[in-house]
Image 1 (tube, rainbow, N blue to C red):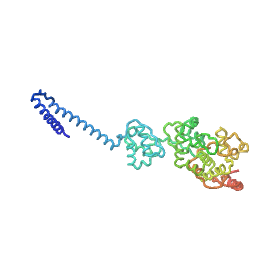
Image 2: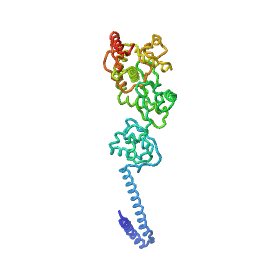
Image 3: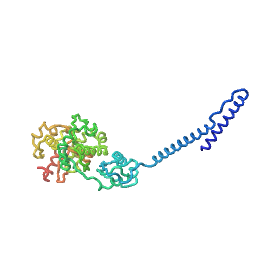
Image 4: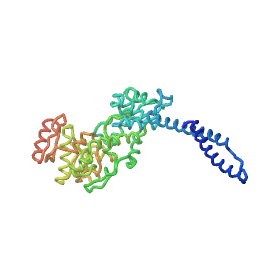
Length: 404
């Protein structure tokens, strides 16, 4: 509707009003008092005012709608390489572009997650972003931020490597050597097991043994990129998180509950036993099977020397080679990890097993074995079901110079 249209409409109404008033005026002329007409010119002025108000409202609404529509179709993004203010951002293992984008938005590196995801979708290199810590500027364009993350040279290198099979104390010593964080700091952080994000079901046992909470077994052996100047708790959090991620990807808990009929914690203990005893990765599953057969099938003591040594280590005592152990060691009831004396699995894992040991405990090969002994310098073991078979294998081990 135009201003002219509005004027015509008001004039039309005014004319109709005058016709009605004319009738009344003529009636007044026939002996009634004539009334004075008011406001004829005011109606036109009101029309103009209302027209301008209406047009202003329409214009504002159109601009607001355009602005909203434009914002909907335009992805919010910063321009350029950002400000001088820097922030360190950690990219974790197995994170998606959306996960990374949300982290970047949170610390104001990029303006919107959508902008970063779109930039990542347009660049095939985004599929190979490596876990680690990166230094980025605040308020970067999504494309500029992505360019930093796809360049491995831009990672802040602060790596540590922890091999399979180290006990928790040995792990702390290795971490301390590489990070310069005191061992006592790691020990203090590890005492409060409930401060770590380990689900409660991990500390449940179906074998009627008491639950002893410990980080032993949950410090996954791997190479890690650490944030700059990390605390002991941060380092241990990263390792525990890695364990939970790997176990989740393997469906470890579901598989051991379904196929082994035991709790995940018991299977983790078995994985640690196999990791400690196996001299070769090919034997990890078979040694796990021996442990299962002894504990759950035959109700025999494990009689693993490595468990006895673990008890000595956590008590601050000197460990022993198997050839130096005697009857007194095997009869020591004060050592709760003495699997020569106590039947069943140990109170906790005895080291931190790697993925292959976890796989061996989750899906061990079928076999009736109850004994094993290393028979070559490569660490391969021979397995047996009977004492006689085991003694024959020990002869082979002596001939190879493996045992006395």
